[in-house]
Image 1 (cartoon, rainbow, N blue to C red):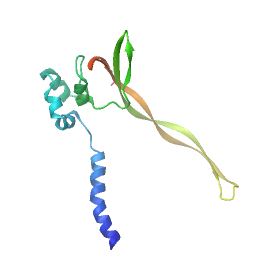
Image 2 (cartoon, rainbow, N blue to C red; image 1 turned 120 degrees about the vertical axis):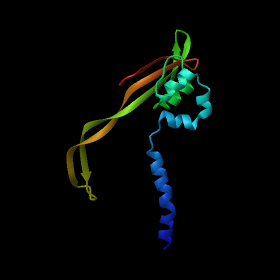
Image 3 (cartoon, rainbow, N blue to C red; image 1 turned 30 degrees about the horizontal axis):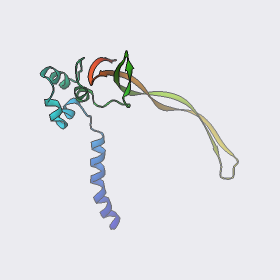
Image 4 (tube, rainbow, N blue to C red; image 1 turned 135 degrees about the vertical axis):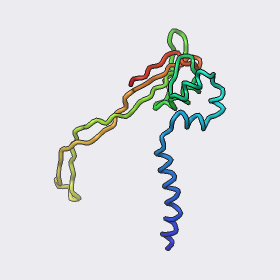
Amino acid sequence: MRLLRTLQLLIPGVATFLLGACQTVTPSTRISQNPVMYNMLSTEHKVLVQQGRICEGMSKDAVFLAWGKPNTPPVTGQQNGVSYEKWVYATYQPVMVDTVSVGLGCDSFWHGAGLGTSTAYVPQENAWVMFQNNIVTAWEERR
């Protein structure tokens, strides 16, 4: 009975967590979660953000609202004496890989081996944005 009650309490919370984790975050979602950030943008940048697009001259906030957070930590450096920050966006592509498995029994005798394939997921850069002084100076999106 106690187990049943515990499950009744846990299941709604777990379901809510899993459904929330599966939600797609869009520019509209980020705008609704960050209205002050959005309202500080120019009219032109608001239109682009709503469409999930960016342009040179946009702020980091505008890029975040349009494209979200980058998949990797920002890369920073200097170019011609000017500091820059680069955001990289990636998707994960499935790649089939050959696998070899070897197993030993509990008594350390040869138990078995096998060949097979499995799927690995490799990051593939599909967009980047370059900022200088928190403003977009260059960007590229591969479709």
